Every structure is written in structure tokens, then in C-alpha cells.
Length: 102
DNA sequence: CAACTGACGATAG
DNA sequence: CCTATCGCCAGTT
Image (tube, rainbow, N blue to C red; front, top):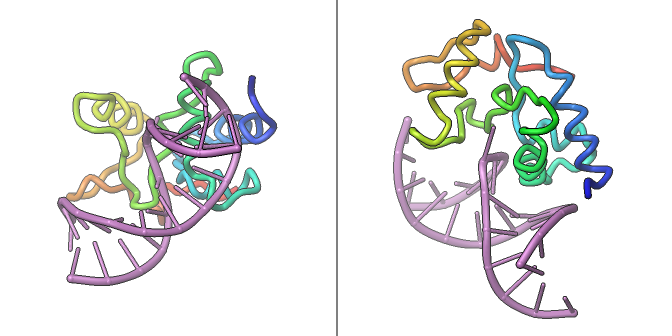
């Protein structure tokens, strides 16, 4: 089953606009729990497949992709770049330009 | 009910 | 910038 939290998180993720990204902590905060970043992870794992979520627009607080190489990293990066999101020399995303502000 | 688990976050070295 | 730790929270087993 999916708790209210999870639904809220799913809802928020679905509202991230094209070409923008959001941090786990940010989403958690919008869902009502600034410290529940890990629940965002769980929500993605449980619903990314069925819910049609833009999971690739969710990155960690360092502006980087959390997935390890060969385990989804390339896919996420490709998806983001196809939306116009650029990475700097340290593989980080420029929040000033791409961070979504709810 | 206790232990375990994460695509995390902040801090320290 | 990088790794190592500790703290956090809800869902599973």
C-alpha cells in the first residue's frame, strides 16, 4: 500500500517541469518532512515503474546523480541532457539554472 | 515489537 | 573534491 506521504511525494515529483531538477530533501520538505529524503527514494523505487514518474529529474543535494555508473547513471544523465540540462566539469548540475522551485 | 534497509543530508578530516 | 560517520524516517521482514 501507499501511504499519504508516498502519494504526496509522487504527486510532487510528477509536477517537476521539463528541463528542471529537484533534490530529495527539497521534495521531502514539500511533502511535509524535511528529513524524509530517504522516503523519496522509497517512493521512487515503489512507483517509478508504474506511475510514469520523471525520476531522472530527482538528484541529491550536491547537484549530482546518485546512481552509480552502469547502474542507471548513464541513462539518467542522457535523459537530463536531452531536456537541456547541462553538467559541469565535476558532473554536477547548476542549481542556479536548473533547480525547480515549488 | 526489534532489526534491517535505502538513488539522502550534514559534518569532519 | 573525496571518503568516512552519524543521524533521520517510513516501510519491510
